Amino acid sequence: MTADEFFAWCEGLPDKQRYELVEGEPVRRQSERIRHAETKFAAVVALKAGLRAAGRLDCHAFIDGVSVRIDDQTVREPDALIHCGPYDPDDVVATNPVVVVEVVSPSTVETDATRKLLDYFVVPSICHYLVLVPERDRLVHYRRSPVEGEILTRILGREATVDLSPPGIAVSVEALFGA
Image (tube, rainbow, N blue to C red; front, side, top):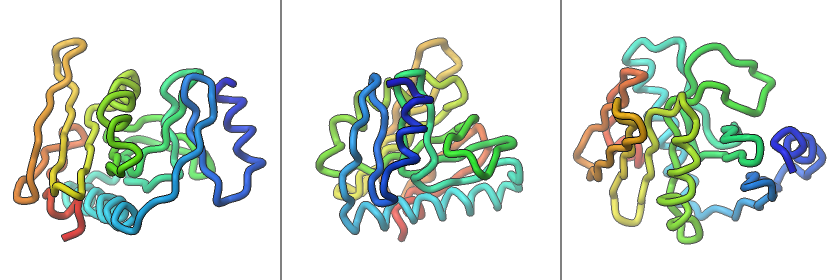
């Protein structure tokens, strides 16, 4: 199935069913634990606050439900993202995602650190991939380097602040976890 076929197929699904498209195959997203839901909500609130504090009126933070088109065969739905630039409020795809966030859960720990890492950095606009690990109070920050093909990695604790440039904001890790 192509990405366009996938989006058409999704329109006919009941509201509670959510999928991603991985190499042309629809993959159903699992139910979330409360900790996961609380963490992704806190991340969106922290990203919105960071954008507001930096005066970035051209960027917006979205919670899951907004997709990222990786290529014609893969569509991901991160737990949160920052999109910069104009967008259609009736669209389901962020056309210029700059930051994507995934909250690790037991069923996604391997995929978040491997496959999604590879997928997200195929998208040229994505500069940062944040993986929140609530059980360990850790943030893994993957950042696109100016060197072609190089991705820098940092592991941060709750007391740290993560620099997200672009879009030019700083967010405390503690706020991303909701403390």
